[in-house]
Length: 516
Image (cartoon, rainbow, N blue to C red; front, side):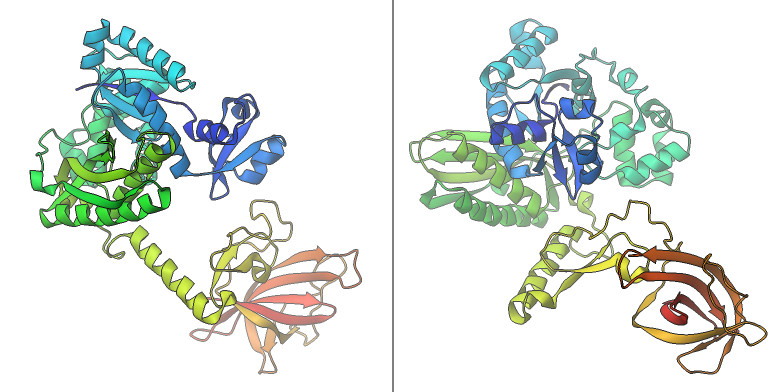
């Protein structure tokens, strides 16, 4: 099917700036998990890139305005764009906030061609919403999306040729399945373009890769992700809810969204189906009817359905969609796939995200019973010693390391890390083959090779291997300096060997950690 995709570049930044009332002429970025996920054109001119750490981005551009990632905000504000497109085209589907797709045949026939329709859509979005967008037209959603990123119209039947020279990295689209490992494998196999990947026969892909790779292979060939043999769900799978009292607040809408999502997912699962296109429809107290279709690359989970319903209701209620409260809400699975598309991980039960939510609720309950300091999350940070690299953060607080692990740490111990770090250093004796104690000189060198090591008063054991020393002269300006040197030693013989991390400080040796 000829598909037109309307793409608003850097939509998370555009939405955040619009919500904050800031002009797009200043450098801005949206950050999630302390890394940049989107940036404005002005910020990219200053060297800000996706995936960059927040601290590095602010170091490159001190005037950078940083926003937290907020999918609800992005979806709510994008409703205005979808509504503007819907004034000129029918069958509007939101792929994700910032990207909307429509069948190209209707607008092209009405406005006299695909190029004229694309120009009208661009002008429509700019006039109604005041944001810039790009339009791409091609055979299928995937090719049309990449065409929109480049602002081109692909001739009918030419999608495979258009995709052929593009890098395989394009298989990983925001909001789509995680394909980092597949892309890395294809690159190592020498398949660096979509055309090279498409050149492999489907039989060979099916015998060597998983189901997602087969879908990716179809995309690289310019085909739909799944064969066009989807069946229309029975009418009784649509569910509705009469809201009494009518919903006019976002918090109440979120509660309704969760209930409907669970019901819809259970009904689909009972028929062995999963939803990939979700229709969300509402009727207000004044008989106003609203509707929107959301498309998803992966089959929707209960949480995925609830998120999209909540986002859509939030967009309607906050952008003046209905003039009265929503009285009736119903969901229709516009398109479904066989339930086997929801094959779950063997070791993670009913889904990793759901299991994570259950674990999070359990942690919060423990904190409610025993206090906030009863549950900790270990956070790996920077430092020279294993003990100072790990910080325990109370559950629920921001997981930011005390020190940046990406910075250079002179004197840091090399890999591998020790398996056990002792809570208190254990005294040891280190002597050379003549029986003299081994010391560390002012030039951070050992006076002799260690021959035996005695741990905490135990009989000395022979040293069969050692490495180091690694000096760490810290706080040399203070009264209590932390100047020390560390070595790794392997003591004893098979099968009772032990690998230890030893530190020398003020004339004495102590054991700080144990290696497996």
